Image (tube, rainbow, N blue to C red; front, top):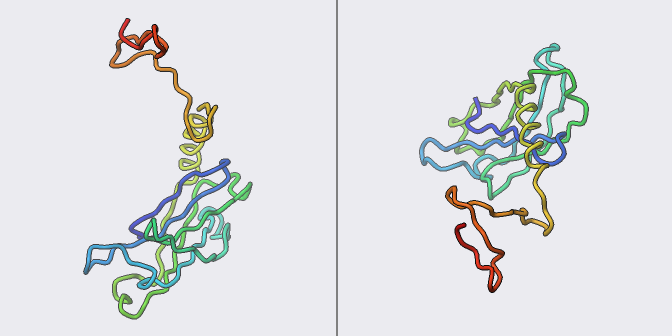
Length: 160
């Protein structure tokens, strides 16, 4: 099994992010792109004889994440599918060949994952941004004590 699996929402509800990264057992640190020189991801429908939902696709190494990632825009290709298998195929440098299995697969519950994603999306979509990148807030209570005032001279903030 992959040590790190990340199936998470970004964007409009039709995108999944896959992350593949492994810890080198001899150093305790994540393998780098010098250790794992490439990686592909493939998604198959486990409910329908392994039909390919995403053909083997090259992942991109992300130095900040210290792993390979792929952003999949799946559109309607997951409609009616509850479970899928995700296959990672790393290409290893000769020095790490014994530390990794040639191919790794995980099964994800797409129905549950996408429902959780939808719940998070519903909540984040309700946030208001008057200024880009800054959440609008109306501070009315601090430590369960009502706050009065506008913060302007003569109407300083304080407890009611």
